[in-house]
Image (cartoon, rainbow, N blue to C red; front, side):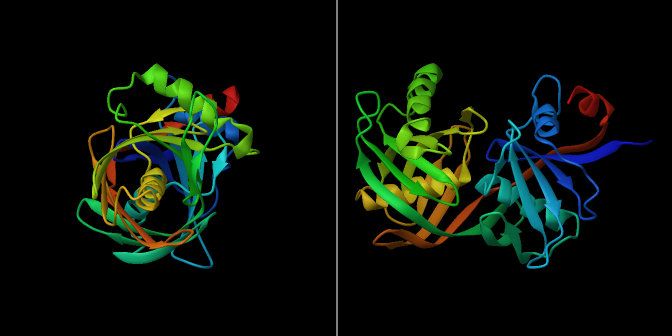
Length: 277
C-alpha cells in the first residue's frame, strides 16, 4: 500500500514519542504533520516526534520535534528512546555516539535503561526575582533552557495551579525570544528529589523531562541542596539518575540514566494527515 508510515511508539519515564526510522531520508516532515501525528485524539498521540536520519559524524542523527510541530535542539528522554530504537533496529551497537541539533551524544544501551551523555550545563543563574507569582527562580541550559522553582508543595500542587505559575515563567521577557521550560521540585535529601516539568512546545505538564532532571540536579547542587549522583523521581513514577562534575558556572561530564521502552509499533496511512495539513 502506498503512502504508509511505519513507526514505533516509545516512552522514557512516561515522556512519550513517535519514533520514525528514516535512514533513507524519504519522509517529508512539516510542522502540521508532526502536530497531527502527535495529537492524542486524532493521531498516534505523543509529547514529541523523533526522526532517525543518517549522519556523517556519528551512528545516526536524531531530529526532535515538539508536539506543536516546533523543532527543539535536544530532548533527554527522547534521546534515550532514539538510542534504544537505533540499537533495536541494528542501526547502532550497545555503545555508540549519535548527533543532535545540540551536539554529539554518547549512549550505552542496557536491558531496560539507557545512559546518555549530556555534556555541560551552562548559563547558570540563581535566585532570579520574577515578581510575586514566582519570587525565586533559578535557570540553566542543559541542551535546552530550564527554569526551576523549589517548593515543598511540588507533589501536592494542583495541575492548574502549576500551569498558571509555569506559563507566567515560561513567557517572562527575561527568557526571550524562545522562552523556557519550567520545573517545580521538592528536594528530599542530598541525593534525591521529586520534580514536575512544564515543557514549551508541548505547552503542558509532561510525566518526565530528561534535560529538566539534569538542569534541576545541577541547579540544586549550586544551591547547596544536592550532590551528584541525584535520583530524580518523576511524576510518572519512574526515576531518572543524574551524575555530573560541578563547575563554577554549571557542570560538565553530565550523564542521564533512565528507562527507554517501546510501547508498541505499527503503521498508518498518511493520506488523512497530509490532506488535513
